[in-house]
Length: 356
Image (cartoon, rainbow, N blue to C red; front, side, top):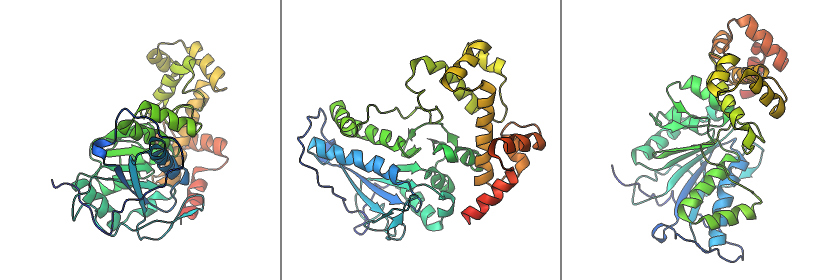
């Protein structure tokens, strides 16, 4: 396979001016003194928080180290500005009409940043672009919902991947052969997939740690008033506040069991056996940390997945009921209406109108 290439009209280093701050000593310099390059493709509906969570830490790494460790360039499909999900338009410096994997040496990475309405951004030109990057063995980063586009292009193969939890159920049912992890980010071969939003900050920190020192990472977190960063393998589904609570480790294990057994729900007795706890101990954990019962939380997880499938896929409602562990359509519809105050068919009609 040929080495990645660089197209003159496609890749231009996107420099950032560092503020007047003292440099931080680093144990490791940038590899061979060459900065890591990122071409960031923004798609309409992308998360501005996701983009900032990637770029701002990289900018600070340059600033605080006094070295150019990273460069990046923002592009779009057509070279025009891109509107984020929050309505903020971001200017770009070019388009992806060129081909970065042809025309000369290029050792950078491609970052695809997507968000709302990702299913509408599938196109022959984007598929061809992604497949060309894969053939050239270029590192590919998918942020937020962009994993959907890699799956649509058929390039993931047996690679492990993740996606924002709001699309996880729909992705697994639409592309059922994927190896999907409930993780903040997953790095597998040339692919890095990330849940987006603040998980992108954790990915950025991981990139910085590869090219610098723990001291620089700590300085960046201090500058951003972030008291910690998370490992990529951390689960998205862990409720806020539990991730760092030492007494909740067993509860997190139980929540993971529930998440992985939606289609065929486990009994509380089976969950207790696998978690090596008594039924009463599990009930106390849920009451203390989540103010609910194990069964009610499990039901909410199943209904949340059902809503994703109803709003984001064309699966028949009976199939959705089965995929979420309900024995009958009637039982499913009753629980769904009680929880969401609307029937599954009504929510599907609303989603169709909303998505055009």
